[in-house]
Image (cartoon, rainbow, N blue to C red; front, top):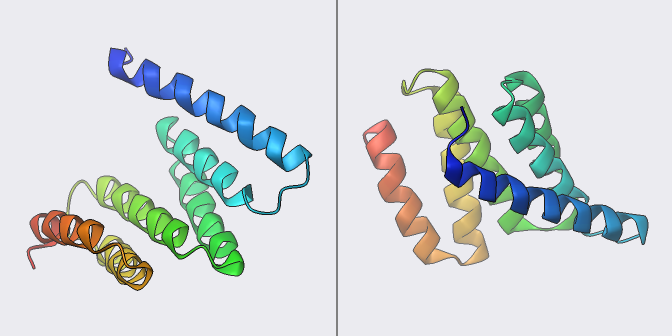
Length: 128
C-alpha cells in the first residue's frame, strides 16, 4: 500500500513531467536531464533498479555536457542513495563514490550549506 504522503509527490512529479515534455516539444535544450532524472526516480519506485541506475548515469552525462554542475551533483546523490539502498544499507564503495562526487560538485557549484548537510549525512552512512 502506498504511503499517503507519496501520493502528493507522485502528483507533483506527474505535473513536472508534463511541463518538461512541453518544454522539450518546444525545443528547449536545457531540460532533457530533468526528464531522465524523473525516469530514474520512477524506475526506482517500481523496483527496476538497473534501469534507474542507467537513467541516473545518463542524467549525469547530459548535465555534464550542458554544464549543469548542480544537476550532476543531484543525480550523483540520488544514484548514491539508490546504490546504498540496494546494498541493504551496507557501506558500498560505489555508493560512497557517488556521494563523494556529489559533495565535490556541490562544493564546486558553491552550495556550501548543501555540502555541510550532505557531509553530515554521508558520515553517518559511511563512518567518516
